[in-house]
Length: 221
Image 1 (cartoon, rainbow, N blue to C red):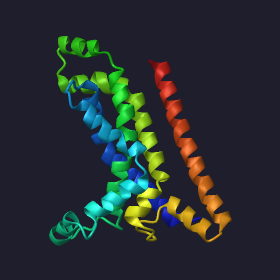
Image 2 (image 1 turned 90 degrees about the vertical axis):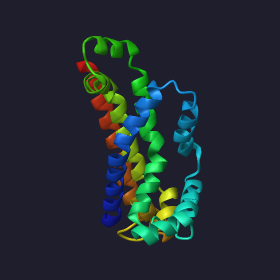
Image 3 (image 1 turned 135 degrees about the vertical axis):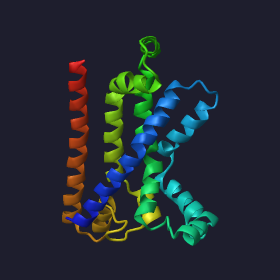
């Protein structure tokens, strides 16, 4: 078992979740509530990583933010930041690639809330923030929980975009999915099976916990 790769994968999944949760709440709620004509363009961009091959996304991140690009050179010269082959680069790629897994369930959850409740909350004297915290978020919680689980589990299994942007640097960019690939390439199938089974168990447990929590919440309501 490559414990270093497992630790890095969990750190990447946790960091991705922390970055995407507030962003997903804001963007998902806005997409669910706005009537702006350009909403379909924004929604299409959000969904794009679902149909785009990870290697394509990784390639354009390398081209746009790599050391040879103007943006990458500016970041390196002024901030000393290198996006490629670093944990920060992995995090950026992971946030972009997992955006639809966070935004779409949250958007659907907010869309399922009747707008009459917002009007009733306003009549009751609740402001916009109070309505969000006391009415909308409790009702949208199952969708938010599902979004968090999907994002976390999907990040654990990321391979293509992680390999393109980060490579396979032990302790820095080598995640568990890449470690499995390396073990298969080295014909160490026993180690690959051990790590793959661990990912399978973790993913199943996370999804099952999400379903159980959602079902219990529905019963309480």
